[in-house]
Amino acid sequence: MSNSPDLPRQCDHCKSADLYTTKVNSGGGYAPNYLPQLSTKWWATPSLDVVLCAQCGKTQMFAPKESLEKLSTSTKWRKL
Ligand SMILES: [Zn+2]
Image (cartoon, rainbow, N blue to C red):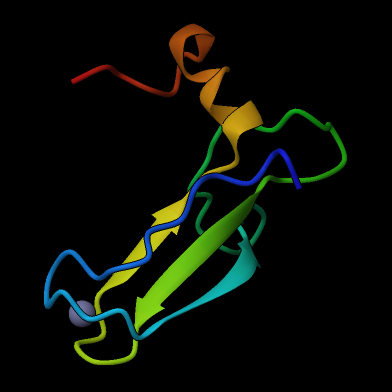
């Protein structure tokens, strides 16, 4: 699980620690693709770790670390 990002333990909106997490596919095909060009496996899109606050509903998504390494060379992503 070394590829998983460090997930928050506290909601940054309401400060609750009542957080839940799941893994979802980042999409492509018929679904929105949240991580274009950041797949490190040609047969699969990266999965996102979703963290949902059970108190206020704030939802956060975290990309896998191996996808972050591809950001600077991807033409789909513009640095802010
Ligand atoms: Zn919250």
